[in-house]
View 1 (cartoon, rainbow, N blue to C red):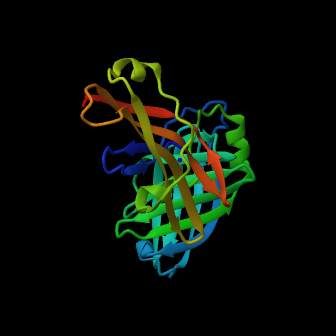
View 2 (cartoon, rainbow, N blue to C red; view 1 turned 60 degrees about the vertical axis):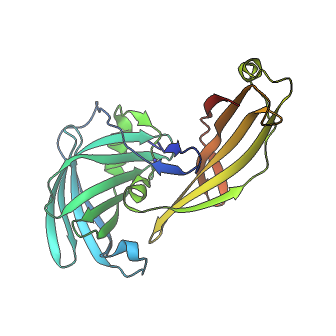
View 3 (cartoon, rainbow, N blue to C red; view 1 turned 180 degrees about the vertical axis):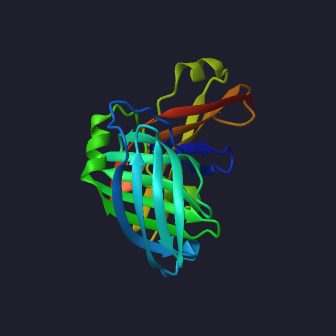
Length: 272
């Protein structure tokens, strides 16, 4: 997810949500004509949210018109063969070694693309969803396609190869309290608190969000601190400050954290 998770912190309940998006990109220096055919094989899961693991065979064949951002071909699943025509935007990822393609528009009957990923070794994964909520995941390989993309001028962004998971699955959320880092009170906070003695209290939490299906899994984390600055006793007159700080955020892969640190501060002042 560009790897663009957007974390919203709700005051009071401290509920954090994650979404992911995509970005468009322009290409140049591309070969004329279509690239392909790329043969793909994989699975179709008619009820992916049930988590029962029951899948059926699926296959497909694709051609790429990189100059015009178009993809042609067909996908066979669940006893039907669906012709496809997709217009897409392509991004060179800074989060994994390869490219991600997202639909600009699609015309595929009952089947719509979620994301197409092309890795540096030529591996191609396509993820699509039908109108009944079923998922198709197909894998192929094309050195011709990755070589053409490497020769092109493609916009770069922080985008994941698992954006599609966050589009359709509700994440499992875990919350735990973590050790409090040292507190440094900003001078503006001190200057606006008129009580003779002020103090700061803090709690820090880590939220972990996980989505998964079949052989795929994606885990994101965010560390959030709650800080209350103000008089030692409630009957003192003065100002208080209530801050929410995002300390760290990123992805967890193979048990290791990969920080995409974008620290931020939300603050409120009030009277006691």
